[in-house]
Image (tube, rainbow, N blue to C red; front, side):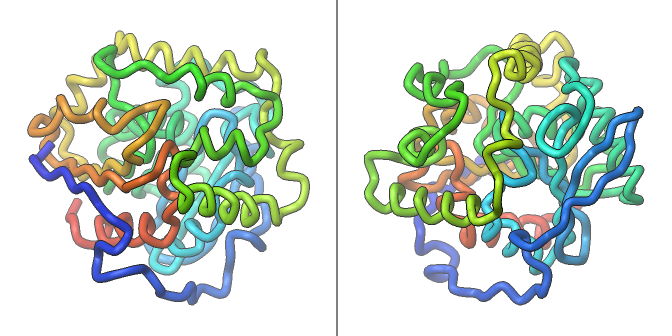
Length: 304
């Protein structure tokens, strides 16, 4: 990773972001579409136009749990494609427990919808899958954006117990989400949490699609455990990757702290890290416009 560590503030990038969303197609109004992969019905949504950006979501995440304002700002310049993994959200089937199978699923999905080369954005658990896709199919990946996630391998901070307790509740309320994705000690972060939740839950019946049973969590855990043990040697592969990588973190993430990446500074050839202030595990939901502005600038100005 080039030694570029940016401790970013809200007013960076020439002040507060005030640009309006100009696309006529919005995330809040986007329809769910389906394709069949390996006999499973896979739900996805697409908005915007331009070079494709595939978004891979977090543990227990679904099509509905992305902040629509964040998606809308990305869609000003890119075709934004969100999808549900097999067995989650709007998709049928069973969630694979093997990281290689998950990477193959993502590649099969993009092929099915006619996308041969794309940028990938993974949030949290989706960042694990994104790294596997990037390292297994580098010819298909123009850029990788890793949000609130960790690098492969055992050398990282432990997840805080308070985060785990909230993450595994069957249903999360606003108080839970302040701890899970934001910075509860910050008044501005708590305000952002409410605004983001209101945007997400403006779509009807979000809760019913979210995995809520311990048996449904286990596949996610198995993948995360294998990623941490790193029997596939992904950490070493990451240090040799030529894919441009943007790592976006909150400065107070109780799940995967930004400090997990610091030992790799100077080791990943084309990576850079942005750490947003007074934010947690979901910096793109606290700062939807600002995060999108960083991501778009990276996608447009860092060549593949």
